[in-house]
Length: 476
Ligand code: ADP
Ligand code: MG
Ligand code: ZN
Image 1 (cartoon, rainbow, N blue to C red):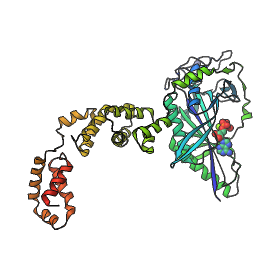
Image 2: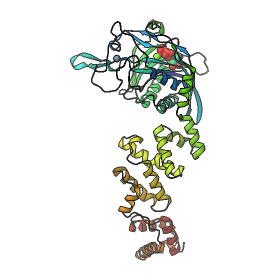
Image 3: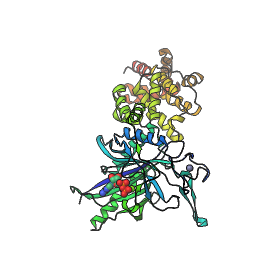
């Protein structure tokens, strides 16, 4: 039987505010345990939360960028549950009246455009962190993260494959990073995803029972875990069994998921409006002000790169994958307006080198100006493409400008015909057998002669001239 997967994603995106959502404690990562705490985020009795305006501003940014309808009136709710890292016994979240609803994000998979609906975006506080210490059979709790602001972005169950899930997440991550409201770091947990997955017989309208997968902290894990889950459910249904509605934990080492708990229902949380926080009314002029400050977003930038620079959609995708990379590309073009050549050098050697060095584009040892300078040296015929690779390696290691490396090492390309002629004459007179064979029709030997010339000139001879002179001399 054919089955169709149905997938909906819940993403928690940690906001880049300086202070927590309801108190003045710092949100910075990596401080000694329990040093960023106060009576409010420790949940002491009698304290009152005060909403951080920046959180609302960032939520509005994301709502606008994902085509959501912003609710002029919304409110916070208490989600009640007990856990050692949740000192109040409830999490302040939004339930019936979230800040934004009815949005969408467009993704592209296998050259097909697809729209994924956003059900809702709401603001909430993060919980603390448990540090398990099995050797001494104890667990310690760190409340630094308690009260750090999150946006939860819930998608419609519109996603139909692991690849679409990956594309949706990449797009959403790129949007929050363009907006500069979240650093998108999946390993550090500032961009986390839970995946809800069910399958149904092809053609059936009703959804099947879903399982929720947690602990997916990289794109690779998300796609891998979803694939695994689809197969697990297929096997159950094919054997006539039933999929249990449950929460499962992905184990990346084992490459499988394990049941964590049966799924709780919303009513189990006994949600109710938080009486400590008044309903939030959002002024439409504020929304307009924020709208005017939004940067160019990934979709618009990609389209502009295609139109303005005549890049292929795939190249435009890659170059707009982060705002910083797109900025680097456009900085290069300010120096040298050759989009295709510059794009190729960025997408090939530059990203390859950064990847190998484990660096981001912001940490590139090769500046945009110098990369453009290198491409210009090739275009002007000063160095060959081959020499350029060597120059680039030196730039990557030393950060020196290409012009200096070329001058210091005497790498300027030889375009002097008489100098090349001289080298060729010498080589031909040293290889009488090959010349004879060439003249008898073994024209493949051209490569051999070119190779010899390049060896003799240490790769500096202009290949075009070399070919020309060789053909003349050999009568080709
Ligand atoms: P909960 O808090 O119970 O997880 P949410 O409304 O926060 O509920 O999230 C539900 C998520 O599950 C949404 O992303 C939604 O698209 C998805 N979803 C709902 N029903 C199904 C289903 N049958 N199969 C797959 N995904 C589903
Ligand atoms: Mg959920
Ligand atoms: Zn605090």
